[in-house]
Length: 341
Image 1 (cartoon, rainbow, N blue to C red):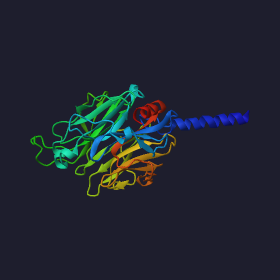
Image 2 (image 1 turned 30 degrees about the vertical axis):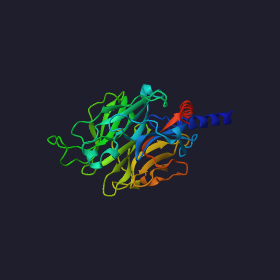
Image 3 (image 1 turned 60 degrees about the vertical axis):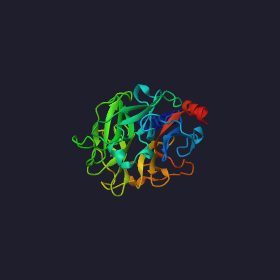
Image 4 (image 1 turned 180 degrees about the vertical axis):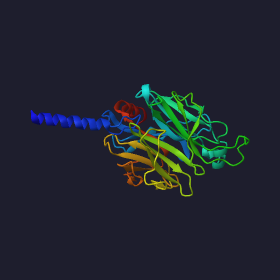
């Protein structure tokens, strides 16, 4: 009986540790129902939404869906989407709703200066109840007219607010410069709240390190009030770096390793996701925009910039650009295979 009592105590302790393990806000990691991953990306010269489905629960092995063709091709705005972000429903929409949001930009039809002065102030939005059938896209304006563009929108469910916090990068021009012909501001991170990706609150500034520019913000929820966030600075030696907060999305953020520490140089579009099976492993995709696109990194310590190491990319799809990855359940996995393979 004493042996049984000890075994029961150990079992309770193990289960408590498992429940307390870090989780991402919307993916409910360490959930036995999670059997794989779905990735959404764009290609450099093909700004449409492409899907890759993992080969089982291997977080680094994916196969293209739809024979490698696009899943979603926008017909409004510029006709091109960059930086697609898959958003799993939060709150009452958890497990019942998914969104794709992205940048309204087809760079083949413009140039980078024009795109930052007279770019779209709206984001693309698609929604789905099964990850297979998607609504017609809509363009939703999220920024005011002093902005020159809205780039790389992403979202995280804010438990405290009970809404989605949507964030993006923008540059601004003086109010007496309606043609945006003068000096533009540094690029900063802006945000707004929404419950339905149709109506948004007034945009506010979230991160403004002027005169330094920052773009491509992505979060990962570590459980409780702890978060990590990843950004790209636009300095003379652009790099992606990580910051940590243990008191919420609007808490105190610190940069492990100090103000000059970074994860990689010459990359952008960071996106982090958790391993469904290993509670200690996190993956970070970084876009080598001057080379072959996304390459995966991995870490077991989100308190150090130096902990990120190159992951096995032998089965990771090549030429993917700034996108996202979410965890999925068996029914979603089977439905995606049935539809697109």
